[in-house]
Amino acid sequence: MKPDADLIVIGSGMGGLTVASLAAQLLGWRVLVLERHWRLGGFTHAFSRKQWHWDVGLHYVGGLAPGSPSRGFFDWVTGDLPWRMLPDHFEVLHLPQGKLTLNWRETEQAHALIDRYPHEASAIYRYFDDLANMRKRFGLALFAASAPAWLAAPMRLWTMRERHMATLTTQDYLNQRFKDPGLKLAIACRWADYGAPPAESAFGIHAMVLSSYAEGAGRPEGGASAIATNVGRIVRAQGGEVRVNAEVERIVIENGKAAGVKVRDAQGNAQTLHAPRVVSDAGAHTTCTRLLADAPLPAAWRNRIEALEPRSSAAVLYLGLTADPSTLGLTGENHWIVGETALAHAGASVDEVREGRSPLLFVSTASGESDDAGQRLPTAQVMVPMQADGMQRWSRTQWMDRGSEYEWMKAEMAAGLLDQVDKQLPGLKHIVAHSELSTPLTVTSMTGHPNGAIYGLAATPQRIREPIGVFTPVPGLLLTGADVCTPGIQGALMGGVFATAALIGPHGMPLLSRALARRQHS
Image (cartoon, rainbow, N blue to C red; front, side):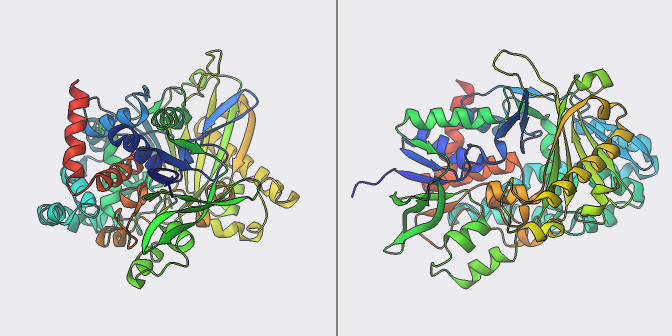
């Protein structure tokens, strides 16, 4: 039987799109991308209401310095999609002790912190040294889990010191380095960028995510959905296909190997599609517990993934504005509204959100993307990390049909968020013409992720001690995305790079690196 494709990719998040694009360009494969949603892109997709447009999950991406490997892979995967950079002072922390503005350059960040906390100057410098060391070497330790044996062993040996530090909780690291509670809050309050508060998160993940912005941060021109649009064009050029409304129900195993998938379309029609290779961007937990539910897998592998069950969730308030945020002095920077207890909880309760006392809020003030006529339409977003268990009573309901009580709760949550933000960014409330709240239940409906998880596997030290990597016990089946690297868009991209290297073979990463260097120098 002739296979339906050379490679089937389950899911069109950044990790799946990376594998699809590189396999099509570098290997010339016919790639079939299957997406359960009606739009491509995973957390890089966008949606519209009236004249406003919002990116769903891509608020800002690091690692965009020209000539850097991550920027090279972004350009290669997306067909040289241009990026719009955030301003140099890209983060504003609204702390209990006052506002603190941070430049993306780490030397200037260090000076800003030292000006506020001069008695901790040496510890602050040491912290940024630790970030630099993690950035340089810990990425290799992450790749070791996805590398062939001949490459993995020396990598683990060479990065032993960094791996030891990486497995500290962020809280343990902060307690070892700093004394001032206010400084600890300033350094760790951006934990929502990777989804776990300091008591739960691995310092290695904190370091890799936050230090990724040391090369500047930006957003794609035309919005995040341009990534999937460009990759779709690349895949089709090699005879491949991208399909939406195509929910994979299970991975087909024949003769002990992955041989394709069983997929169901929006009308409920099921079919089996064959390919000699399958890469899953559905998330390691979903792949293991749902797509391979009936497969005879080693108990140790199942247990390792199930122990890292995704649980980090959030609600997002999408705002359509009548005036550009620049009229309020907002120039595209991010704002973090930080309460005294921001480091102590994994997320706000429903009541805290409704009452305008969420411990931690993230506000993106980057203006909306241009419409077809080239007009830039003003928008903003407010994200609050929160606990999904407060919404379990509606877990069996359907999107857009959860009942009047649920809609009333969402309206109260939206009002509470807007009131809380307006206290720190006065005037924003008065230029809001449209607001719409996405809850953890929305995330589950759109992505299939358990608990409304937005960051995949829990970002705990255990994830570092026993990394998942791209390989599975099923020959011909690989994992991709943030679960095999670090949370976020850049982590998902590199997870896709690791998976592509494994598809190429034992020398895949050296070959990819040389091909990237040739491309960047051409």
